[in-house]
Length: 612
Image 1: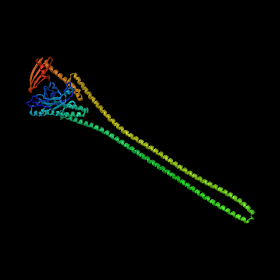
Image 2: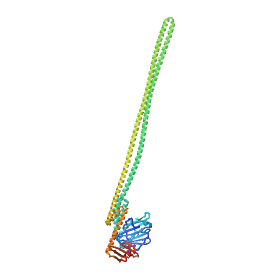
Image 3: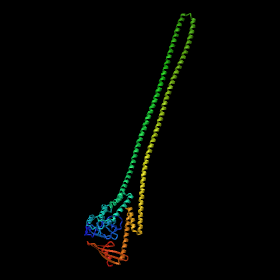
Image 4: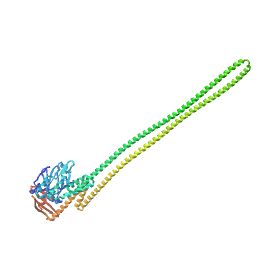
């Protein structure tokens, strides 16, 4: 930045020609301007009222100067050519100084044809104190730029130096304290910052609210309200963060609980399944062991019965065999006795030979008959014995068959009993397995019911969170709708006021709309239009007043302001009057104005000479 020092910029009692103003507050508005190139439309005021006649000196990097004078509304305007650096100084005799640096470096000539950006800084000037020491203190603050604007090639915007903007209020307070005056702008800034902070807090834009309350605190450090609101903002931010953390923690807790519940359910199901399987296996083994034991016992009992039956059959057979042997022995003994008796009889008969021939023959016949009878009797007895033996053997065989049959029946019964026991054991095992399966099914159903309950609880929690989020969204949407309604109402009210030519009220409505929706450009455009209408109205009033005060034609007046010679020519035509000024400065430069706007010398001569 090229910086040039001029003697009139140093505030001393000897050089009071030009003292540059101090801008207390900068309202930074970007709007679409009808003219190309970056543009400034500033207003200078003192004690809250427009300050007319303040000099605005604009110097570029090559040293070329442009001097503007604030009009009756305290306004001035200038279009900045591209790719240049500028020093802007605002001054008036008896007031403090103020410097602004402005750079369009990087903005090409071709791009500037389409580039539109307008700044509207509002500056309040302080009266210069007479004390030399106080002036030196002011110089220490005011001998360098207090605001700076530059072209941002990356964003294709005109930006401001945020550090200078943030320190502006503090420097303002220092100057006010040093000069021993109070600034109406501080109160305006304070109230504006509070309004912006309150609106931002209401819309839950905590970052903007915090910035606005800090801005208010910088304007009035001793006020408690901004600190209270900052604490409220901090609490709101903390509550919002805590709520977000709580929601996240609850989601995480539910997720962990679900994972743990799923794992526990799975583990319990596996353990229950293993226990049921082990119990079923153990029971089956026990039932099998019992069945095997019962079968072995029945088989042992059957074997014992068969053994006893066999032993009895063997004993009966041995007894029968012994009886038969005894019978045969007796039969042999009887047969031997008979044979011996026969031999003895034959011997007696032979000895008696003839004596008993007839007797012998008779005896033989009788003996033979007797032998035959005895043999028949013996045969009958034998047959009877044999029949009895056969009957006895048959009885023994029958008894053995009956015993075998009984043993078989016992064995069959034992086998049937075992089969029945096995069947009953199997049925019992099946029933127990069915009961275990039913219990397992019931357990799984309960586990599923529990899991479903957990899932439902989670779904309900998620639904509650979603409903809460929806409520907050609707509340925010309603709040936005309310803001939009207030905004639309403010715009409509402003438009109605414009139609009714109540420009101050219209500007207030548009300003209220701008505070409701700071990002909207329409309020800024309408405020600019209102300012233009106000200026037109004032100018019309001003020119009409000139026509009333001065006669038809050209009236010339000459005055001296400081070291500058001022030539005023009032040109009245009908009901319209225009003020032309020729300002010859002490450093050799001459400037020409028409109703506060800069014109060329040829325009000044053409419009004022030859009409006196």
